[in-house]
Length: 419
Image (cartoon, rainbow, N blue to C red; front, side):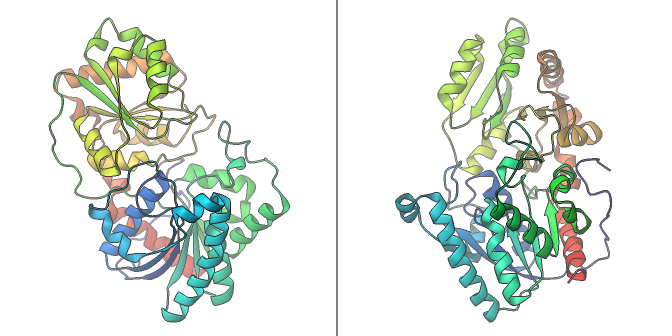
């Protein structure tokens, strides 16, 4: 059992109502299409629930963050049928994101109340990215008395996040923000988190949450581990995602140490927005010949790029305690690639990979540790042992659709007992 991944205080009852078909009203501003980390994990979650027969009405924000390109022709497109969009890009550009979300909140409340009059929902589910995602649920629950589960994917508000993302759990909030957090923590019947590390972090400033909360990991979709042509001439390490507050200096300094030896056979492939910054940093460490940067792709094209690589790379920020379950982990697990995680020495990913395998995790502030990991993985690749020794496919036992759905059903049972 993992210290910062699973909820150690509760275990899943395999004989619980895991086969029940539920009807759910979900407030999830960033849920569809899958164009950012939050909308990807939410779309995959909704897709899994729909596939097992659940009925879901999702109230989403038309104007969510778009990190990936849109793609209307993929298996997640079925989620669109369950989504009620509020807002538009045109309105958001005219009045700004903040006022666009204020409009979303008001209209989401009225739509939510209307839908509860038409349908009998088993419970309300809300997701707090952005923070206002819980506000319509709070107001609709007060009006309809429908049981409510609140999900938290990141520390909220962002000022409460650990440095360098925020100012820590002791960060002072305004009166309205404090009131909002305490109302949500009090009136939601249950709270969910993607990992135990984040759950424990919330307990530092919202202690009342801990006794009525549990862990539901990000989902890795089934049947995604398909064979694709892999570059056998180069050892390709792929990174896709944001690089905000994730410095490349340690990685490129390690690569620089290897450029005259195995580095000649290593290629780092990035799919990121800040292409020029990556290449400028690579030139600074004289490793530009070993680095390539793709233009941004849609989510499924990005998965295909990772499939063709030898190893999938995760880079975390320099945190004292890695409280996050990086959403990219579930994407990598669902295609079974070995993971190379540059992470804090204490944290969720360190616990996960150290105890369950699936790759290598090293101190993200140690050049020598990264050199050692690159050499180890390279020689395993050279000896055709990489996938056998470091593949992450077996982690589907922690992130696969069936186990996450079992866990969530157990959480729902707990929430309904709190009503």
